[in-house]
Image (cartoon, rainbow, N blue to C red; front, side):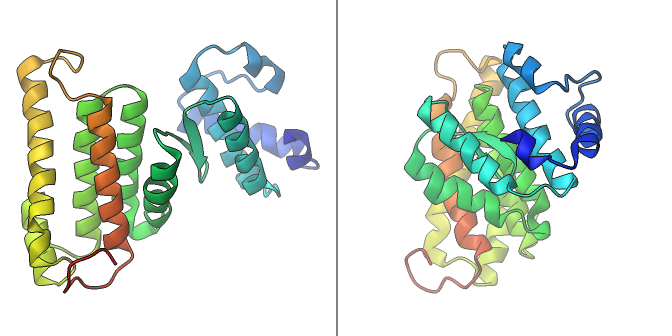
Length: 237
């Protein structure tokens, strides 16, 4: 399938792939022969090569990239590999339904240039889950929410201050305050737990399920906020 994508662009694709691996992935001497990828036993490295290939395909103007991404996701799903490609980047998944209804819409909405910082933080939260670092994932999800509020024009240096301004702008309703209070306490708990134990794997520390809970709640909230509108009544728009 990759050969058909780069037909007529072979030399350009090889050069683009090399540049992506070196300057975006930080791999000094990338392996360009796709057959050799089968011998790579490092999951992160394998995913990096696939991400680089998607970027290189787009750089050379290859057709059928979307279909290639869909094919990758089908292969991963058939082998029960807990990653999914969304717009050229791999993110871990915990539930197909939650991923489709919350995570993917959040990432796609945040591609808007206004939300660049929020997109980076939310994607980092997902990747931290993949690295089994729940505490950092929770913190990064909170950062994504802060960045989203800031991108929408809200003023403040903390989630609380940003939320207060969001209420003033009618982006959220007064009865939404309990939601943001809960998110803030969740972040504080994860931060305090890590600073106390000093080890993300210590008994009692935030775990993977905690991180997914935070990422899903924040993702759903980001989707609501990024889609616009005002919040004068109870319910998600």
